[in-house]
Length: 161
Image 1: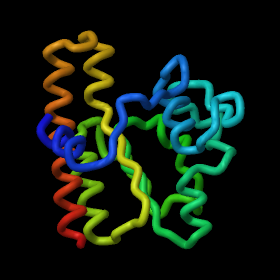
Image 2 (image 1 turned 60 degrees about the vertical axis):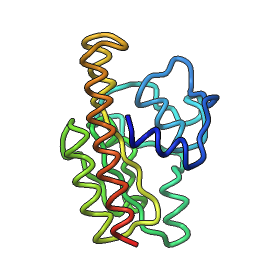
Image 3 (image 1 turned 135 degrees about the horizontal axis):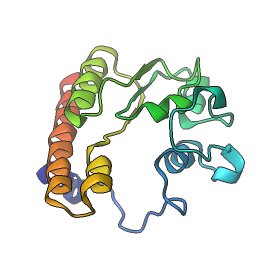
C-alpha cells in the first residue's frame, strides 16, 4: 500500500486509535462522525433500514454546515444513507461498492466544488474480509485496490489547489 505508507511517513497518524466495541460498520462510523457512542446516537443496526430514519445527533458535517462550509460524503455501502441528514451534506453519493468508482466520483466532485469537509468510505476490504477471511489473498487485493483509490483522491486534492 504505497499511498497509505507515504501518508503515514509524511503526515499525522496513530496506531492507537480505537473504535466502539463491537466494531460494527454503521454504529462505529456513526460514532466517528458524531463523536458520541451508540447509546447516545442510537444507531445500533448495520444495514440500510429506511424506516429507522437518519442519525438524530449532529455529525461533523452538521457542525461544518453551521459554519457555512461545503460538505460531501461518498460511500461504498448503502447503509451510510442513515448519515445523510438533509441540509448537512451538500453532496451525498453511493456510486458503487468499488473503491475506485467511489474515489473517481469523489475526486470529480472535489476538483469541481472543493468542499471543506469530505467523508469517503471504501468498502472493498471489509467485504473481502467477511467473505474470504481476515488477511486472505482476496482481502489483500482489496487493500491494494483501496490504496489505488486513495491515490486517485490525493491527486484530486492536489489538482484542486
